Image (cartoon, rainbow, N blue to C red; front, side, top):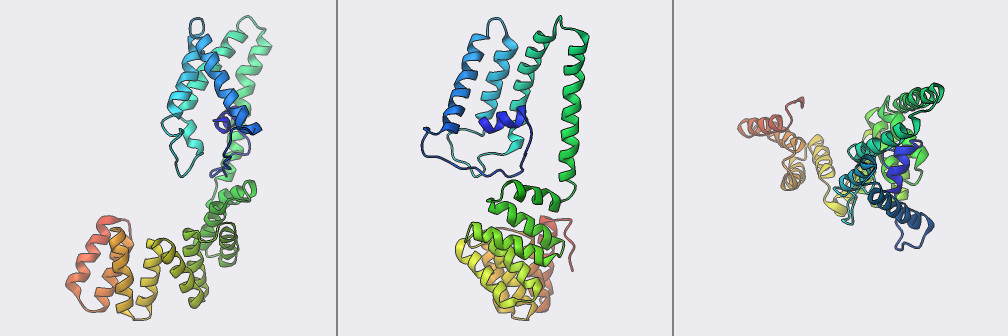
Length: 287
């Protein structure tokens, strides 16, 4: 909650995937300050209900809408900034009311400063933030600079470099992700893809197998199937794509199955899986 309030009131060092550190006790300064702040806001909401309803409504709205996703129930991503979209409506109502009360009767210069100055500052910060979003690489580069311990940020940056065929940069960032979190299945699979593109098949297979052993990872199963298909070992390819299809009706799995049947001259089955792949992903280009 403290993080969301900071992002709303002072939006600097914004991150797409913030690193969250948990303490097993409330007896730490940051945790205590957060609890005190929440209690203080609740007291203000109660006290202001009779004479200043917009303030009370705004605070209760903030709490109620945040409880939909940020509560005692464990979730994979404890902090995601888009969760402030709906709760921020309450804070905007409360703060706008406070400013209106403070500015009534003030000189025009003071009113102009707040009415014009604050939007100008917010527009400038938005324009700057948009420069970071100009490409996936600039976005995730910013993330690893702000969160150097975030394995997912390094992995995502590495994958962006992989997509851009910058294999050395991809290898370096995915390697860092795996150093931060050994056994990270997304990183294991992406490292396998980098090495496969580099022509290091033996090491690529090691990483794909590691991801499969760790979590029976769908993409690694398909990567193994594609490799065996490429060398003409259709039996092995069929083994891995069958395992992936047990996990999910994924268009790539259907496509690999189509390739196998097509290569085996089983046109009837090939057409069936070709149609299934197109149904799952109409934009997918079949070869």
